[in-house]
Amino acid sequence: MVRNTVLFIGILCVLVSAASAQNYYPTNIGNTWVLESTDGAERITYTLETPEEDFSGEQFRTLKIVTEVLGTSSANTSTFLVEVGEEGMKLHKVVAELGDVFGISRMEFSPPAVFFPPTLQVGEIWETLGETEVYLVGTVTVSSINEVVAIENVVTPAGTFENCLKIRILTKTTVGGRASRSTSYQWLAPDLGPVKFKTGQDIIFELTSFNLVPPENPYDVNADGVVNILDLTFVAAHLGEANPEADVNDDGIVNILDLVHVAQNFGN
Image 1 (cartoon, rainbow, N blue to C red):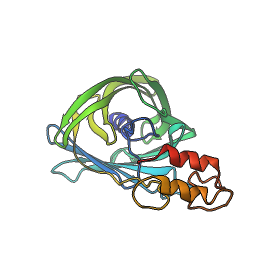
Image 2: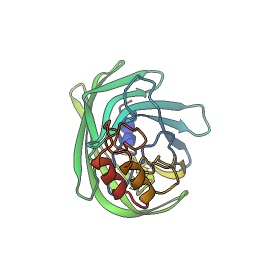
Image 3: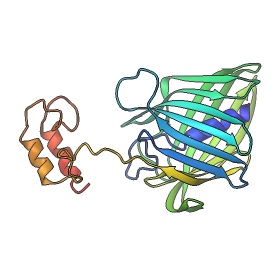
């Protein structure tokens, strides 16, 4: 049970994020990644979905993780309510299936926990802490120290990925005053996301397939596929208006800030 909880917390570190110079964790709704263990025994599927809960704004996601034992009917599903913003990725809630005996574990974060800073680079360190009640076990506390330790090339069945960030996750799980520790590793590829994961039990998962939904470009206001002088001209023609098509930063008014955003994205 505790190992499952630790694994779920580690897996979460695969995807959650905010924008950085390189997008190591695309967060568009509909994105899917499939990783399989190198021994062919297990499969993990990550999917980003629209939350069922009534949350305002487009920054919320539900990260659904399905862990399967291949060749059997054994499968566990965990969901993570996450928020993506300028301050990084924030975690609001985790609901994890722990099997028939221990049932479902719920972990809520108030204030929300930050799992990733706005940018990632070698030497970056951040910590997370969560607590939940588990049937027949009692209170379980999970804390982790995450550190970007290297940049490496990674070879997987889905291809070879260069300049991947290697993240070390030191996890401490406390149950009834007794603590256990584990070390896992996650590799993230630029503009793609998770490509490899090594659990605290030395089980290695590698990317076998993925599907990334193309992001919408709010600065391509005329929807011709590229940000150029035509978009800048359109925005300039509506300065001072409450025109939603020209108000690219959604602050309610078309102004100089909208012009700056479009100009900074020329060619995209």
